[in-house]
Figure (cartoon, one colour):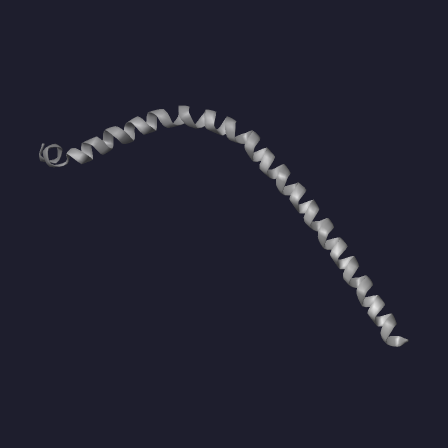
Length: 77
């Protein structure tokens, strides 16, 4: 009985915890359903950004190689 008198916050914590445990499974399912399309769009956007980055690096590499060849050819002449 002493625990309930001095531990009002303990009792409140148990009640709140039990309430959350009962409500959480019902609240999480709709959130998960809503998050799935968002996650798919994030993944698609990341893939597009990756492809764009790869194309940029490829073009930059080609440009550097062309400049190096031109410089090499200019030094030999």
